[in-house]
Amino acid sequence: MPRRITLSLLAVTATALLAAGCGDDDKPDSAASATATQTTEAPAEASTPATEGAATIDEENLRAFVDAINEDPAILCDPENATAEVLEQLGGEEACAAAAATEEGGKEYTIDDVQIDGDTATVVITDEDETSTNLFVQQGDELKFAGQQ
Image (cartoon, rainbow, N blue to C red; front, side):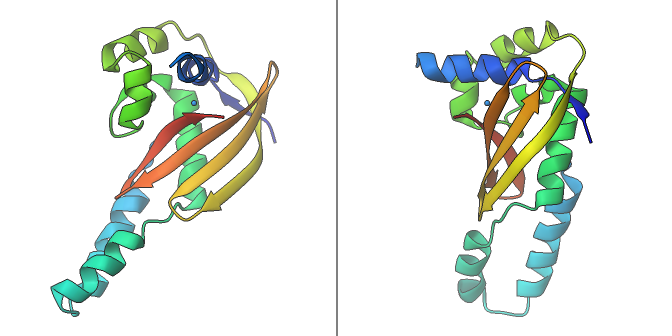
């Protein structure tokens, strides 16, 4: 089923990366709270390594994030939604916001493939103009756009 997404900002990101790639934060926060609740009974030194290594990307949250990018591409300019490396390569939050402000409506798109490997994910998206491979990373309880391949 086609969906709408603005891939132009992601394309700008890819161009910037070559020159040098929604957020639904409720579930990651809930998962973090659940993890904290579950580890409360264990000694602090025993729970810390398990909690740090347990960051995994939830596919439903990932798809919701992609949808959120479609609705408001400027969310990629927020450090909570994009890695520091991506924002730096785009010239910072202000330059990213300026690029996002020029975005016109989204395009029909399909998610062709989702590959999740722990705290990293690759999402292949096709719209009427191109197919792009987008990278995402889970950093703590925040899912972030990490660029394009």
